Length: 403
Image 1 (cartoon, rainbow, N blue to C red):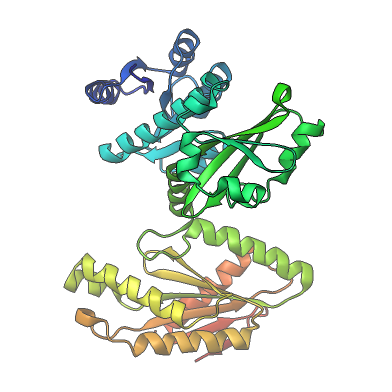
Image 2 (image 1 turned 30 degrees about the horizontal axis):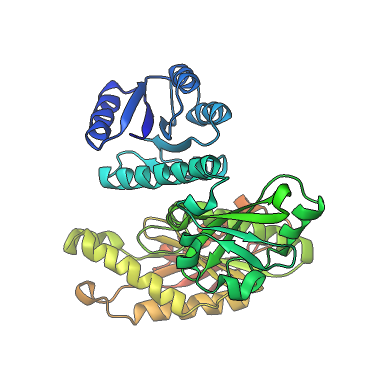
C-alpha cells in the first residue's frame, strides 16, 4: 500500500513540483494550498506524513500541524520554510515535528527525511496493529515478569539483542528501567515511553502492562536516524557552520546566563571581542576560499589558547567573541594579549601573516547584556583607532588598559 503524504504550501509551482516528484517516488499525494484545506483533508483521510509550509495565508504551519495531529496523532510532520528562523526549528521539533528544512532545500535531503518519517509512522502504526501478535511484529518485542526476567523475545529482538535472556533488566537496553514494574502494581497508569542508547544506536521503548498475562511488554523502535536529524537541527541552531564554534544566537544565550550567575554570586567575568585587521584584503587578494580558511585557522588557534571553561563564538563576519568566566579585567587582558600574539605569529599559508585587534571588558554590577557588549565593542573600536594589532580594555568607570 502506498504511503499517503499531504503537501501543504501556498506556492502553486512548488506545491505541484513537489507533488509530482513524490508521486514518481511511489507516494500517494494530496495537495492543499492553505491550512484550512489541509485540516479538512486530514479529517477525511489518514496520512503517514504532512509536509507543511511554515507561513500559510490563513494560519501558521505549526497550528496546522497541531490540528492534524489532534485528528491523527500518528501522522508525522516535516516543516518547510524559506524564513531562516532557528527558533522556529526548535519550536517545531519540540511541538512534535519529525524534522525541519529551510528552503531552498536539497531534494535528496528532503526525500531522505520523508523516507525516515514514513518508516517511523508505519512502525508506530504496526505497534497498534500487531499488539496482540508480538512474534509477527517487525520491531523488537520483549516481555518481562516482575522479577525482571525476560520471558519472551520475538525473533527480531533475539537477533538484535542475543544476550537479553541472560541479562534481563541488566541489559543496556533495559538498564535503569526497573520503574516498569510500577505498571504491574498500579502505581503507574498507561504506557511508559523512554529513549535509551545501546551501543551506537538510540531506541524508543514503549512499555505497558498486559494484565491478563501479568507481564510487561516492551516495543522497541529504532530511532537512530531521527536522533541524528534532531542533532543536525540543534547544531544548525547553535553553531556557526564555517568555524564550528557557537553562533551569535547561542553565544548571546550563554552570555545572558553567565551574567545572571555573576550577578547572583558576585563572581568576576570578562568578555573579549576581536576581529582580523584588514581582513577584506585577504578576500580581495586571494578569494573567499582562502578567507574561509583563515577564519577556520584563527578559530582553531584561539581554541588552543583559551581555557576549557571559556566560550569562543563567531559574532559576525570576521568579528569573534571569547567569554571568560571567573576572570577579572587584568587576567582577561593577559589572555587577550596571548591570543593576539598567537595570531600575529601564525603563518596563514597564502595569506601570510595577519594581526587582530582586541577589545576587553569586565562585568560590573550595574551591567546588563547591552551595556557589557557596548563596552567591549567600544574597546575594540579604540584598539583599531590606536593602530590595530593591540588590546584595549574598558572598565565600567571608563578606566582603560592598552597593550
